[in-house]
Image (tube, rainbow, N blue to C red; front, side, top):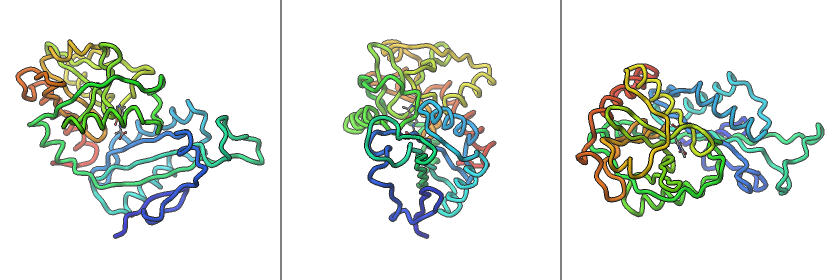
Length: 292
Ligand code: PDD
């Protein structure tokens, strides 16, 4: 079966899928995106992803005429057409195609610019993430040199890209981004530490991306009587923590066993992260029926 993509209302061969050279997404990163986990053909946390997408579109004043129902149907149609039970769904909406000019295109009724909508899917092995609960992963640190509104999930990701590449070069899974001494988040994940049985993560605001997996973990932890503190924490506090972990759509929860060259705890995944891992994957099973 050929790989398929969605471009502006049509499902086309992935190899033929393209956007116009004057798309504002390519010229200005004037575009927002979402990455959703699909397990057993079902989209995890679809509602929260839609809410975040709509908020981001509104923040950038990108005109978005499609209702949630038909949009969800199009996404599911693409997933079914590709035939992968377990995959990542990528959604990108740009302001559209217009002659290059920094300011928004003229939105007079005669020249309403339609947003460009692209969706792709790619197969993903979620079972590897369950196995990684036993081994954990390493992170490095890097300065957070992104713009000041990283709460908006735009495709302007060069700061994230360079930090992730630094992690890859160092043989680490992720880079935790520092503002001075404060750990904000990872290049594509949210960052957490555990101290005295409490879990701590940077508060929402303009300096982190409000992760869907982050919200989900807060709900699950609170329901299990695990205290959650949403407050800034420093690198020194993270290095001295009992445990550390990260969350995201592509890594629902992974233990962090080293930061730079410092071992966290005894250098093995800890009990609080293990308990949270059970809760996270039980929630995945509840929503999608998926089991490792
Ligand atoms: N990244 N922080 C950043 C900077 C991110 O890019 C992401 C998501 C997260 C976690 O958000 P969520 O739980 O909604 O996935 C935190 C996606 C997966 C990506 O860019 O591929």
